[in-house]
Amino acid sequence: MRPRPLVPSSRKKEDVTSRLSGLKDLSIDERRARVADAMGVRAGVFEALSPEHGLTLEQADHMVENVVGVLGLPVGIATNFVVNGREVLVPMATEEPSVVAAASNLARMTRDHGGFVASATAPLMQAQVQVLDVADPAGARVRLLSAAEELVALANEQDPALVRFGGGVRDIAVRLVPSSRQTYVVLHLVVDVRDAMGANAVNTMAEAIAPRVAEIARGRTLLRILTNKADLRLTRVAATFDAAMLGGPDVVENMVDAAELAVADPYRAATHNKGIMNGITAVVLATGNDTRAVEAGAHSHAVGPEGRYTSMSRFEKDTDGNLVGTLELPMPVGLVGGATKVHPVAQANVELLGVHTASELAQIIMAVGLAQNAAAVRALATEGIQRGHMSLHARNVAVTAGAVGAEVDAVVARMVEARSVRAETAEEVLAQLRGRS
Image (cartoon, rainbow, N blue to C red):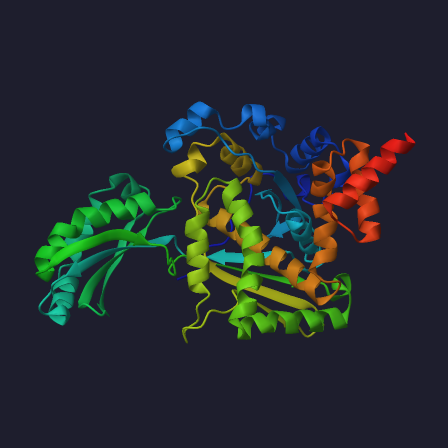
């Protein structure tokens, strides 16, 4: 399938920039104004991101069962991203310190080399219809494939709007899956879901065709549901990270070796891939998409052809000595339906991103995942993960100890200098500060 490029923004390139140095030193109101000005979006886009104007209890009550409240998460802006030539500021919803700063920092190191280059295949999702008690599984497979035209037409009748917008069933496949109980006949509906995540569409189609599938296969159907192994809906991203900005040739070599351990060793791969998902999940969550579906598909994809769990990403050194990172994953995200169209914060974040298609959103998400991954590998290959992470975590410790205003930075500075980011240290430093005031 031919990759589809990220759709350019309607705003002029020279009018926007994601290179916002010093953003962390501004107040929240000042950050909002600067981000809005930099990206050419309306200042009011940030209203929904204030707790008093975000998701209401009434809205939440319509989203899930037994609602008693809502949970807030920090939404930070990742800067410095250029994706397929377009400047992008990326909202990330995460509670983990260092994630936003790390992704922004490594994105900065790609800018002189063109930023992130991404592409995506068509938005194909699959539903499975499981057939049991079939006397002749191989024969049933042939019968179902012979009836493909009929089954495709029946499935497409369930969602005429999707078909009208250019989507719908693209193919049918039938697999024979041996198990300890029997050989299951499993029919796959391959559906182009356009700008939706697609779960509801493919599930409805699978339910509708199940009786006819059972009749043709001469068995009974059981499961009729999508698979989150979305291996036909892939998004790819690559970037070149400047060797000098990373710290020089030795750092590049160490990063390649650190990343290669994740390729070879499943124990390292689990934590390495968690770093990738730190970036991906934060953007998926910020835009109201299904974090569990994305994570399930990503980790499933990390199991290679030989059946061993491995690294989702790859890092190499190019002929100029720079670090080249690549990442390919299923990315089943949408812009229509689900929380993306219900949650006011998700709507605001999508507007801030300036994306118009699900493919475009997926490519930005992948760029953030690769940047976050590179940041973690660099930290591990140089100073170790704790130094940068703990300096940011120190702010949480200081606030928990009771520091307010300017006290927070003072307590953080003392703890980092003493290399003791602990609650008792924060309380001791705070007492000293207040004793002198």
